[in-house]
Image (cartoon, rainbow, N blue to C red; front, side, top):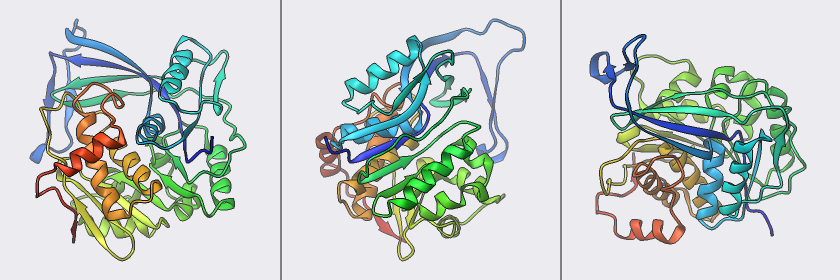
Length: 329
């Protein structure tokens, strides 16, 4: 099997806890919101659901596989019951697991997702694995996403691999630690990237900006870091892309029903656009694919259950309302 899409990053077990007794406090215009619960009390919840084998890079691997790409995943996990469950998840999705390394004596990453009023707050903890990049083939696309602390050398190895394979399409969706570490530490990755995708708040954090920002200026500043194309998602306001010549806007795909919770919407958008580009779609067409998978994912709990096959996704696009269209701005 010739691998077409390789995703690199951490994977986790997510425990979704649907809260029923909490409060949300926001500053003006619903910005800088905080969730609160009674201190020192028993807090009732509606439900708890465990989902194994998720995380930005894992979600990207599943997304690409369901869209028909021959996909492999490079990750580390514990050699425990959770790690074995994660392996089973990927095998069921027909993802090549030969680059998944299980470590004895180190737990599998476990996160807790607190869901309330269709939004989520995530409690995260990344274990410290002995990261080492395996010898990889040269696929059409390498997709790098979230990794935990202590992976600076591992990122250097990924950058060196990408530099040594200039014909491989290199996509980067930075995670929390990668953004926290700063631009300079990831200068090689930004410079080599063909495609970088973040949300609006993440772009502002990466660039060290505060206060209202013009989206076109944000795109230009993100692209100035090195990638050929910069993409910025803006929640319900849609998404934007800039390739150095043209700036595109794509709206959200209309919800077919009320969302359950929004975990994985950004991952679905980013990975689906990358997969469409890998399949040979031009940027303006690939951008139409992303919001469809985002819409589908939020109809269910977790970041993967709603990911679509290529046929179903293209059917949604064919039936889309007239206002669902790419605009050049």
